[in-house]
Length: 306
Image (tube, rainbow, N blue to C red):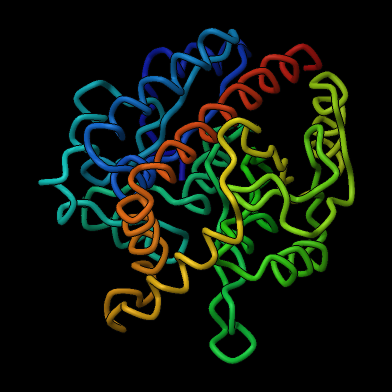
């Protein structure tokens, strides 16, 4: 895998000198947020990392190479809506195709975790992870993100999972897979736009230093990833019932081809942004920034233990 990785000079130097590094995915840039918000947020989360004395490493595939740490030109390419058809959503299943055919790819949660494990980066920040879809007992529609926690030794900071998923089954799946789930200063598992999902987290840690100790033990003793659930800031939280009703409305009016496979989540989020008149977009940006704050502080604290 390392033959396919190209580090930016900043990230290469940070890894060599054991400075704290925090990774960011690129799917959110190409498929998760509209232009120009996507480009602005990509820069803002990297600045949050630097403010907290961590080196940001946004990850994507450019011309068949996994780039760990992106240039401004790379970010602009990924953010430009005109390039969407030239960029694939990359997870474990299509990595070899995108690499082997020298394509461009925006890495999903699973794809970024896989790259982090290969690149030697332990902390990764995202918005929300994928999970078990509603109706999965019949459809078997389960995100590859969950399986990746079993394979990649990476701590993922997210605002839980989106409320459009089956949260109960998602938590059951992670528990069965032996994945530690930690709520950061919360006893409730967050549901992306909402601080509460109706389900409790098995573990609640309030201090970054204590969280770093637990992550360090997990990396040294366990072979799985670890999920850190950081709820959306209170002032940015949206009413979960209203969001659920909007999602039901979107699904009722969607053509089957619009929500097939990987199109499902981007289609719903794009429509939510429109119907809510930007409220869900603002909430999405707020939780990503909050996760970047926690993730970069965690990376800085973790580097003191090694």
